[in-house]
Figure 1 (tube, helix red, strand yellow):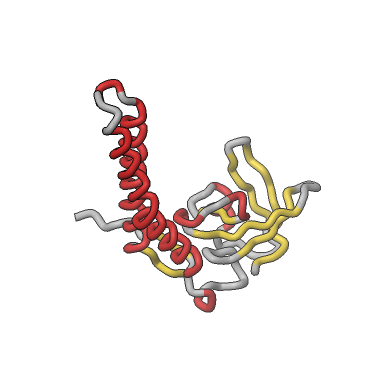
Figure 2 (tube, one colour; figure 1 turned 120 degrees about the vertical axis):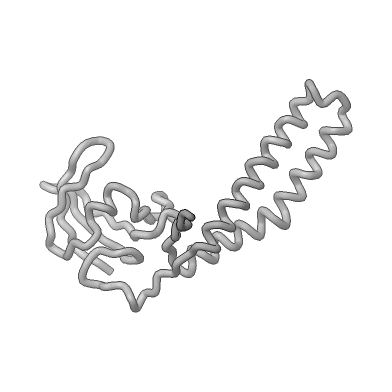
Length: 158
């Protein structure tokens, strides 16, 4: 039997997933069922775009619920006090400068379940995080990105 994937995440990340799951189960699911009921009242289902759209949304919502339940069930909470502060690791915020004279950037390395690049949270599975993991302040690291290779110097780890 295959082992299930473990989803490393912070406690806050798990709580955010639990809130989304609750919202989907208690609000969104009921809204979609109501949309299906209204669309059915329009008659012939074979050419009813409202019905088709509602059924597609229902499939998406149910799929997302299943995904969230799996992530929460297989969550591994990252404990702040168990994570090293002298090397880049899951749960830490790393600041680096692109060489030779780039801007300073900071990212928190999180599990894929709570990654959100717009909030400065990148997945431990991302190319940048994979390149930085285990490195220390002052290390120069070659990072493979979709746009090519870049070199960075780690300036801080929090």
